[in-house]
Length: 351
Ligand code: AQP
Image (cartoon, rainbow, N blue to C red; front, side):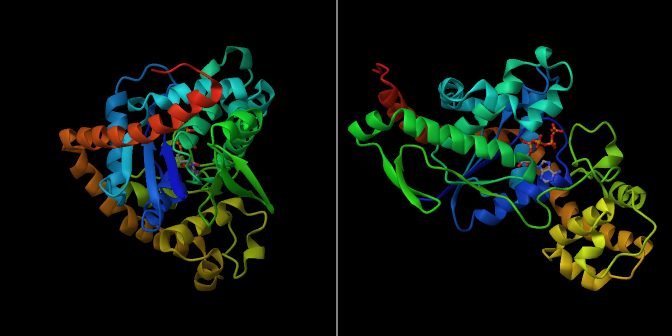
């Protein structure tokens, strides 16, 4: 049965990339699937160990989920650390995955920088915890931005290796299910997860540099539109966004070699639910002096209601904490059911 899982780290202000690449898609999927949306607080420790306000950051991501329209009664919203089975399965996956797999991850290489020997073990093992987040629910579909594609491929590799390494035990315990892998039908315990990536906003770039993704950790606040920015800040950032001097083309091919222009067109397309082609049909031939104010108006129109609902929700801390507790309890039941099977498959004694 299809099940959607995804998460966002409480590592700072959410931005337009997080919203268009991830959260907005979470909202869209909840009408057709059972969904589990997590604030992945344990992951945030890989970026920085000590936060002055981690609890508030966790609440802020939760408030963004709710303000964007996720229904915590029909679906599950919780923070990762409340369900200890994530960490338990991550340990097992640390023993399934190979160091070479982790060393190849571009996010690890980018975030560890030159001084790799000094990066935390947690940063290296990040994808293993991510695989556990997903597979502890045996989730089948994971909506993410394009930057997470490589980690999801690793999740598939981990699931496949676990299924192969333990195939006899899985069969003996009758815990295998048939699943499709390409044209083949295979039997395994963990599903081979499908990434849900795509559309014009799968990779939103920095407003200051079209070759870098929009990111919470970029030191320049002008590089991103935060979900909590007011109308003035949004307009100012779009006005100052780097562009080239040419008018917008009428065809997609005309965006080649113009990453900043392509990014702004992608943002417009994402916010308006149009294709990039349709945006260019409307704005082709026009200068950025016309397009940027139209984009700013659209961004304010779409983001302002979310920001104001987020502020309102954040005012009721007890409510947010209750949502997380209730979600954590419901998620914990599902996760424990998987872990009981996993412990049996591995051959651990459990009471
Ligand atoms: N620029 C982006 N465009 C589209 N999607 C994006 N996502 C992140 N940046 C973009 C997607 O947002 C979800 C949550 O991301 P995360 O907080 O878990 O981690 P991240 O990818 O590391 O996000 P940031 O903002 O770039 O944080 P830092 O600066 O800390 O690395 C994911 O689905 C991600 O794909």
